[in-house]
Amino acid sequence: MTDHKNLDRRGLFRAGGIGLAAVALGPALAACSRTEDTVTLDSLREQGYIRVAINNEAPFGYIGEDGEVTGSSPELLRAIFAELGVDDVRAESVAWDGLIPGLKAKRFDAVAAGMYVTPERCAEVAFAEPDYRILQAFLVPSGNPHGLSTFDDIAADPDVTVAVLNASVEQGYAEGAGVPADQIETVDNQVSAYELLQKGRVDAVALSTISLNRLLEQRGGDFEVTEGFIPVVDGEEVTPAGALAFRKSDTALLDEVNRVLAEFKENGRLLEIIEPFGFTEQELPGDLTIEQLCQA
Image (cartoon, rainbow, N blue to C red; front, side, top):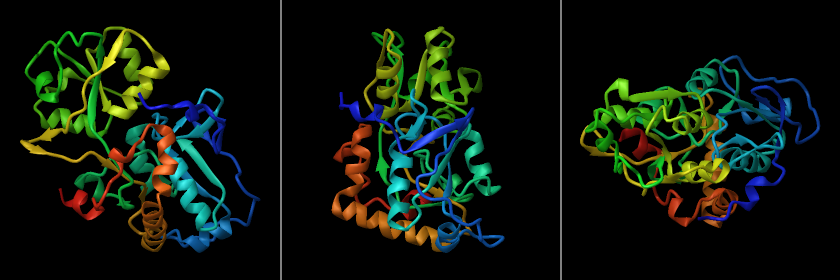
């Protein structure tokens, strides 16, 4: 298993209350001067910080036991905006199904939750270029008693139930594979999913391979992570890949983010940032583009 020792270091953000993670990473500056409909780099520089949503899902974006917020996505966003002159990142933990609505309602300026890119989400938000691609898997009791390897196996066995994050791609993958609604348990976060499995209320938890390996490392128990697989929805393979998300109106800001991200991909900084969270060269997005993912 990949070494996760750096996951326990003091992060770049501090929890400031229940469900809220915020810390000043730079001096307090003037109040926001953003326009009514858009957020620009200049307005963020003048404001002095950017507001970000996470979902408290390791390793993508989460609050550690020490109260620090870290993860591959918020760390990447922080590095990008440090290059852009915005050193203060304030992160709020939000239920998964509240991320996009909160972004659109201007509760925050970006989502740094390792959000998978789907055509449906592309219709609602603007994604930066992808920063990782990954396989799916299940967390199951040791020995995998139901022999689960894909969502098709769950659909074929009416006695099997699976826990997924509400409004997540895994929920869509399950539904796309024909898993009936009464075999799908939706939860707000991965810890709740784990607890359902621990109590025997579900037979599996569906998340990415990296998320499940980290969850098992943190929580332990007589469980195992199945071999990773590429999901099939309505008979077509899909590409699980994620990116930072912004509002559609903030096009100039997104252009700046993509410019720095492209530099990080070229000079190796992207892997340097996400590697401590279990990512390897295998999970790098390569030449995959946001246009391809949004049209999939």
